[in-house]
Image 1: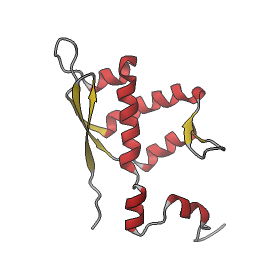
Image 2 (image 1 turned 45 degrees about the horizontal axis):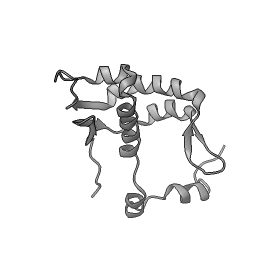
Image 3 (image 1 turned 135 degrees about the vertical axis):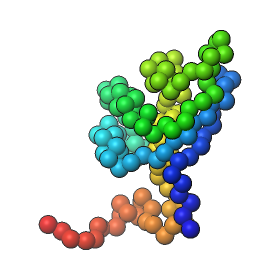
Image 4 (image 1 turned 180 degrees about the horizontal axis):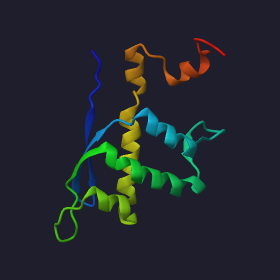
Length: 137
């Protein structure tokens, strides 16, 4: 049986507040919009975002995240008032929290290496090393 769920509940702490986020997983159509901003470092093989692309990617993620964040709660201002997702998306003050949400969106959208091994699906490494099969043009 698959361990897939249509949404994932996440928790983090931001300046003493326990922030709860319920997210759905990234869809292929939106990943296609994100890919142009991702670059693979030729020396390390790590995927990185260039400084030049960071602002454009942040703008895109600000557009996409509201469609993936189903619930957002627990964040409060200095007077104890609830702070909503719209404020987190707009205020630079919350950039660390926003980066965490973007990272989590990617993390919950892909199988971990252990999950991939247990699923019988090819790992990223083996799928890169194995020629594609199927019709060719």
